Length: 105
Image (cartoon, rainbow, N blue to C red; front, side, top):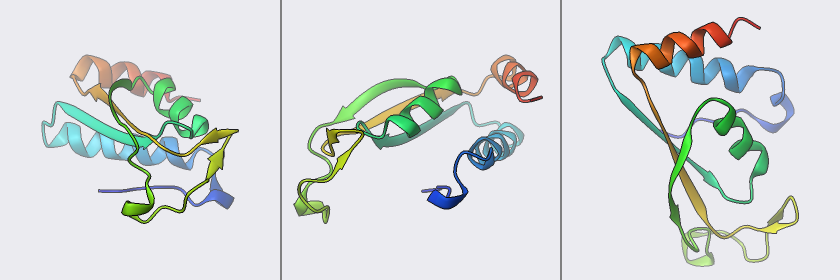
């Protein structure tokens, strides 16, 4: 299920709160694993997920192609939009407790 924060509302903690909410819901349903995906050139999103403890595990090369409806030549952070990167995180109770402890800011 895609979720995102509209660009004008980014960098205000909304994304962190969304992920925290999703993690609480998943913990309550005993889900043990969460996967997310973003463009490899989206350094802002990639940094966001890495800071939350997600780790890369797969790249879909040439995912953002015209055949999938993406215009050619899109550049973000000086990098051509081509590949999708998947990241995952373990939702063990210990990991969630650490994450919640870090969210006190």
